[in-house]
Image 1 (cartoon, one colour):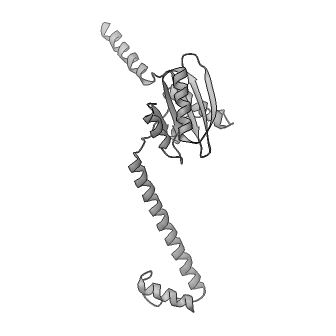
Image 2 (image 1 turned 30 degrees about the vertical axis):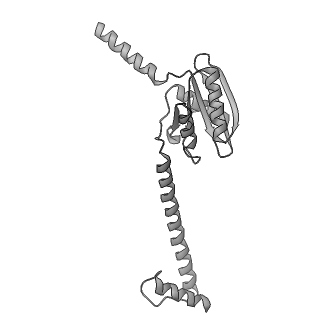
Length: 196
């Protein structure tokens, strides 16, 4: 019996460590604004704010909430705004969870979606430990990822432009007599065709 009780106590202690901050903060981040909601887990008080998208302003608001309501933990959805906010919050000593958007549990009957509701939902899910976190890449990793994406986009656009040009020439009856396209000889032939 003692063994079961001690095991049960260990389990409860481990569960208590999951969310030990007093305040859960949900941030609905967009390019031009951030909607924020903080829930004090001891009193249930909800503090909401509309903030500019500047990272400095968001970090300042979060640290003010921490000073007022005690230790905080923030969360926002991963998205096109990147991970700069997560890095700045972490640098300010604020634990932050970047949630996978596809894994966020939405209420079944809730058809009205607003930024304010999304911020409160994120705070509630964070408080209940119901968010699936994504790994925040380092700045170097994010830069490399951006470079690879930009290179791939440029390659796709180049292929599309080549395809459009070759079909335009074909419609006009202009056919390259050589075998290998898009090399130096083909380029010289294209320039001559352009002059003609």
